[in-house]
Image 1 (tube, rainbow, N blue to C red):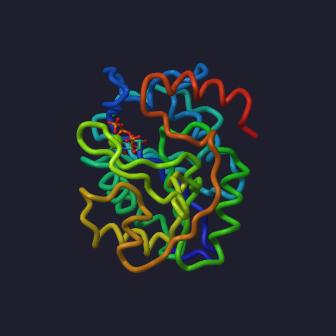
Image 2: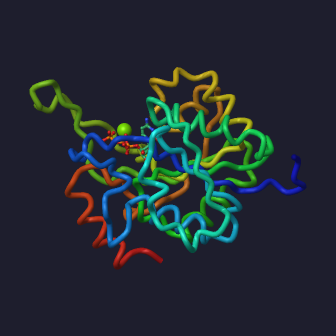
Image 3: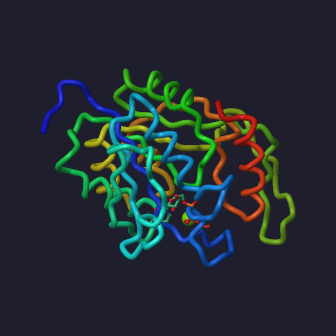
Length: 235
Ligand code: CTP
Ligand code: MG
């Protein structure tokens, strides 16, 4: 089905196991401020007026998602039980599964389930900066600390030049057709974010300033930090 105006569709890969969190329950279902971690990003994206659909890519055997309370998300929320071995495989499978419902020109905003601190204003900033470009783009933060390269013993080999280095965040926003083709051509096991797959095709995605609050919950202590930031920084 072709739409006169490209739509903005969110895709949340949520088929990981959260191994660095060190607990049995996949981290996207860890409790954060009284809700599953994933519910924060889902709620923000579903509530955003410019986002028309929120696709969530789950592990094929996921029993947790259906047990959560998704009231208030309306009919934008679409679970897809087709997660893969890696994050990139989950994104690729999700894009394929949604093929019939998405136009090639629609924009896909891929966002980690483990980033609960995404703010509506950042979604707008990304969309406004990227929609006029053919290269897509992503939220990111300029590296603030001095960067050291280490050897295996944890000794400093050298200080890296910080100038021009950014930390990639999500959402990462690309036209559906471009992202699908980039992932199809990429070595999926080596891809850690959508932008790197697109970069390999010779395209230069745009870096759009994100925020510290949009960090990725990875280790157990990150839950408490995210809880504190959610209380104060989310606007
Ligand atoms: N993800 C996914 N499919 C995978 C692996 C990861 O959909 N096979 C998702 C995660 O659920 C998460 C996002 O990709 O929402 C970012 O990945 P990451 O933070 O690395 O989560 P995990 O891979 O679950 O954690 P870890 O690397 O510690 O095992
Ligand atoms: Mg991972």
